[in-house]
Amino acid sequence: MIQPHWRLEQLETFITEEQIQQRVAELGAQISEDYRGKDLLLVAILKGSVVFLADLMRHITIPHSVDFMATSSYGAATRSAGIVRILKDLDIPILDRNVLIVEDIVDTGHTLNYLRRMLLSREPASLRVVTLLDKRARREVDVPLDYVGFEVPNAFVIGYGLDYAEFYRNLPYIAIPKEGFFDEPPEE
Ligand code: 5GP
Image (cartoon, rainbow, N blue to C red; front, side, top):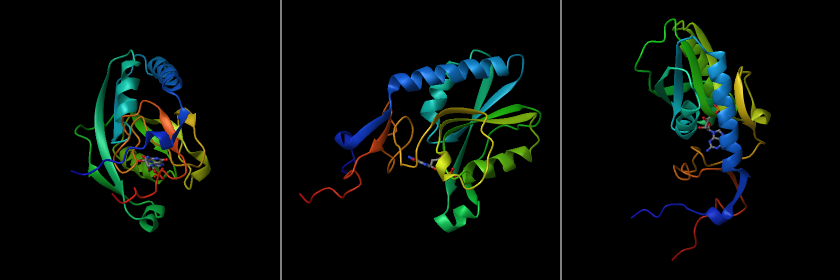
């Protein structure tokens, strides 16, 4: 059996579950107000944004639908050139629809910049972005963010959908790993 990486004692809570829930409720209320009477489609970017999406959509009190995209970045060099691989495209056309991209975190901005350009070429009625976290200090390309949950410092964060090696997505809070978290486990 593969031993899962699970070191909760080496994590420092950065944004609590209560803080997240309160902010997500505020974002949902704002989005409901801004899109009232309009046809809204949420486009969530897998996998990191699924937890945020699940909470956010339950705070959106107007009719809306949901679709998913999955991306994968190449190595650092290609990534800084702004090239993103689409692993899963949308199931439905977005022509003339009001599209709201749901992101977990915007870091360098390359992923979102690529996605925005790609979706804009399909001529939606509007295209906006909601991100739970904004790691602004790391931005390399300027991308407009319409709704932001929290700004985070230049540190690797996990939890509430965000992973380390595919684990920790289920934490209900956002945490920053302490020193030693990334070390190899001692030999048995
Ligand atoms: P960008 O293209 O903006 O540099 O990268 C965005 C993607 O990188 C996010 O959607 C996320 O998957 C990943 N990412 C960026 N920063 C972090 C972080 O601090 N923690 C985790 N788990 N993923 C991150």
